[in-house]
Image 1 (cartoon, rainbow, N blue to C red):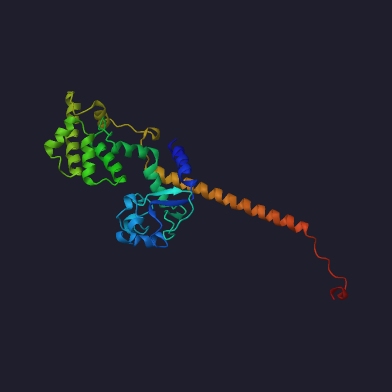
Image 2 (tube, rainbow, N blue to C red; image 1 turned 45 degrees about the vertical axis):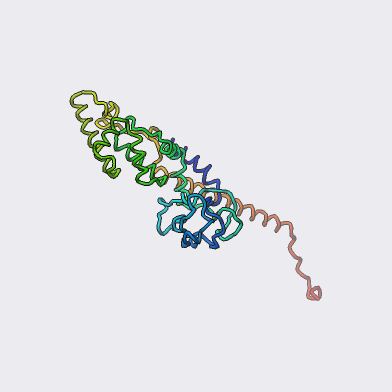
Length: 289
């Protein structure tokens, strides 16, 4: 079951970790917390910004929760990740990466959205140019590349190049004919309209078309429900349910631990009380002198 796989991964990656590390930010910022870091300029951040954070202002490295909702947080530039390293504040001055206490809901969501195994596989496919149109429609290909590319913060021109690279030669020639330099959304829309017309003609006349695969044609006109086990990737609903279940389980385990500690403490106090004999009251006032 998909939910079980997600929860297992979530437990290994997040619930067993205690803090949140910013691998692209070192602790020489002079600021006591991330809210203060958010207000620093790129010059003030200086050499404390590493890799993607190099030359970036604080508000690009650390996004405030008031600006981004818990489902839309982005920790890519900061290099955020779950960790068991001890807390290391932005002004600690140790020359090591910043580590903040605990893992918030939005951070857990971002980690799941960007590092769940199927997501990583898609990112690798896009990076190495192994995504191909195959039996998918133009629209499905466009949406897939757009979805993955946004996670990797690809620029529009990079997304267009990846989209064109994924097209077979005949479709690439079509793209050149109608204007491959159109905005990607317009180009994809025009190509999809051509595909739908050719699929309709293929279905009507039963004439083979090199631009249309039988499977694509069948999927367009005779769609069938897809079971959860057949789906690729992870939906927002899956993530929300998995995270809420994992956090609820963590809360239950924490409450059980507190109850056990409370019971152990009460038991120890009861045993200590039994070991100490009660004081003997004086028989008369002379014993008090």
